[in-house]
Length: 388
Image (cartoon, rainbow, N blue to C red; front, top):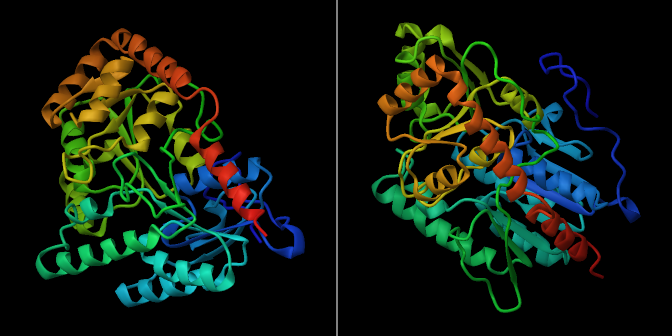
C-alpha cells in the first residue's frame, strides 16, 4: 500500500504494508478522523502504543499515507474543501471503519460515531484532546451568531461524548470533566515519545532555533519572526502547516523582511522527519499567546523540546512557565523583544546555554520515566477490543 517518499530524509520509518489484521480479518482498533492528517504526532503516539500492546490498527484520516504511523493500515483522503464537505466526511468516516473498537479524533465525528458504534455494537472511544469551547475564542472567523451556533454544537458533542465507553482528554482542564455513570475518563497528556525524538546532541556551530506545531499568530508566528529579525546570526526552522488566515501576512513578511533568508518553513512533516531537525538546534520556541484556549495548556512541543535536550523559550502561560522554571531547562519571555535579547545573549555566550540544555534533558528523563498514559490507553483499548 505504501511506497517510499523521495522528499523524506533517509531513515524515516514509513508505515508498513500489508498490515496483519485481527481474528476474522478485522482490525482491533479503527482510528477515525475528518480533520487530522496522518502525520499528526498524537495519532502516531496512540497507534504506536496500541501496536506495542499487540493490537492491530486501521487509520481513516487525511494526508499522504507515507506520513502515517508505522504498522497501521492507512486509508487516507484529501483534506475536504468547505464546510459541507467536512460535515459529509465526518458523517461517513465511522461507517467505513472495520475495527472492533472505534476511536475518534475530531468532535464533529462523535455523533455519527456514536450511532455507528451502537448500531454495530462496538465500543466507542472519544479523544477530545483540546478545549474546543475555548478554542472557538481563538479563531477570527468565530464571531457573533456563528460563534453561538458553534458553541451549541460543541456542547452537543460533549453531551454525546459522555455516552462513549471511554473519553480521552489531553489534560485535566479539558472537558468533559465528568462522564455518564459507569463510563470512564482517561487523561492522556501529550507526553513525548522516545520512538521519534532524537537524543540530546551537540549544538550546531551557528545558533539555530526550532518551532514544531501549527503555524499561526496565536501560536507565536509573528513574535518568533520579529525576534529573529533582531537576533542576527540566528536561523529558525518552522515545521507545521500555516493557518490560512496568516498565509498572506507571512508571504508579505518573506518578501520584505531582511531576516527572510534565515527562516526556513518546512510545512507539515511526520514526527520522525520533523524532530530530526532538533539535532543540533539550540533552542525550541513555544511562544503561544495568552488566549482562553492556551492559558491553562501545556503544549506538547514544550515536553518534546525538553526531551530532545533543547533549551525552551516560552511565553508566561502559567503552567508552561512553571515547568520551564522548575526544570531549569529554559527561559520565560514576555514578547519578541525579550526573546531576541535572550537569543543575542546566548549567541555571544553559548557556554551559558549548556547547563540549561542539560537540565532540560535531565528533567524530561526523570519526569517521563516508567509507564506512560499512552500505555494505559493501549491497555484500555485492548480490554474493549476483547468484549464479546
